[in-house]
Length: 199
Length: 275
Image (cartoon, rainbow over all chains, first blue to last red; front, side, top):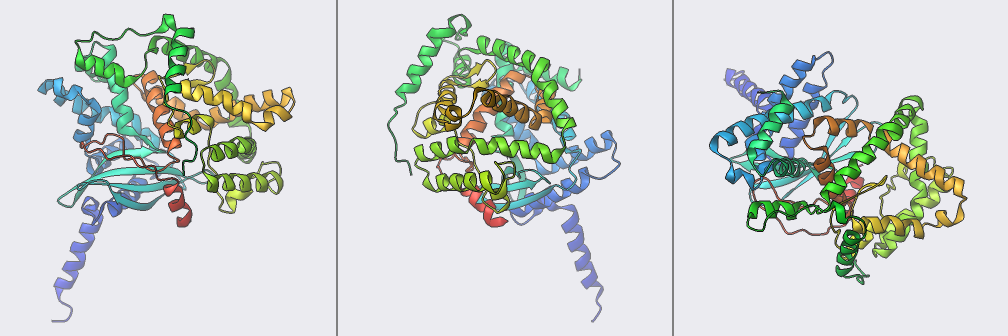
């Protein structure tokens, strides 16, 4: 049975798994490393149009991040007072808002490199992965990823850049908008609609 | 490593209340009615009783920025060769050496004080008055400290958010820190007035130029620029006070919070061994 086709089948399965399902990496640390490499390769490709980059970013974002969970977190105490319709619309607008705000930040990544340093458990289901981005000629930027793992599927629930949590920043900002619009989630939804150009 | 623990949190409260009486009576925000629990909780969480004053002050600072600092920073950023800009950044950072050293000592961080002293000695000499980060290239990376952080390690609370004219985002603790730092800085006693002005202007332009794109980005992409800056400032300060050690105290999406532990310089150690 030398030269069994199964041998190649095995290799094929391995390749398919390795290149299409990084979200099922063995541990949070590898998961961040794989996603980071994939994002760098995919978003820094030369000659991408703005729309193409945005589309790729949307794909990566949904693959790597638990967006509904993050959206819920950023609404804080107001999540409980929101109606079901408001929740659904808010989560959808949140995705749009994040894509609009962040997809342009990945235009010029030439020479940059993500180094994953280590990971530590912060709870039974969450780990903090410490990394830094090397930027030529500048001090490295410290980035920590909070990764939630369930059934060996990893999803990012927060990113901390130089100690600043994106989720917390967003939650604080949303809370301020809600306060200024009379304490109602509807006010925030209106502001998000305006910002993302959706009506 | 905390050896000094003399200033109680009471001082922060005194500073805070004094500042309310002193300059801001007209700018105090009205607290929501006590019955509205969510509104009260949100109001307390924001810890920003002078919000109307602060928002006006941000507008003032932004107008000043757009008229003067931003255009100057733009010309500097685009016109001056990058290596020269790095020299300027290094030179200005090196000037802060004595203040960082003093604050390291006041915090009882003797290893870090030694590191600061060594860097200052190396960069001021071999690095030619600090224009080259010779120590950094040799693997002795620097850190920053200020008296606001020192007060924080002495358990002085930050107090309410405060936007200072020209200085920008702050709070009573960090405001006192700015004054104290300039008093303990030997360079502010030993150098002529013109040098001090040049240094102040240079520091402002250098910092504005380095953060140029981020500030534009934030202004463009935020729903409430003021609230975003407030949140970023506070989180950045907490990170600096913890000396960059990853904080587990922030509320986590997913709902678990972990007791904060001050683990000095763990991350920076990890990074240096990595290199």
